[in-house]
View: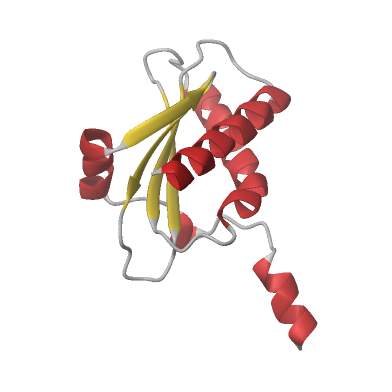
Length: 134
């Protein structure tokens, strides 16, 4: 049974509880939050305490002004969420502080997955080093 629990801890998931949905918290995030960026991604973060025990809650946004068609925006958001899902464990596995994250796509051209993947690892490294320095 011990091996099953160990496997469960390292699963790459991004379930409903881990998604940032609170409008008030998102507004507070943009007003009080700090950011790190690695083109074409910008990550805004804010230390917050969640009652449900989840340490990190994240959300993704793509500009409607730059990408008029919803199909393009949704495709970019899917790429970003997948990259976040696969990389978050390596950066937040031992985190005890609770954070609200908003990942913004600031590029103006449709990206490839490798571009998003590189930017995601870069932005998460910057976030981890900035949080450790504070």
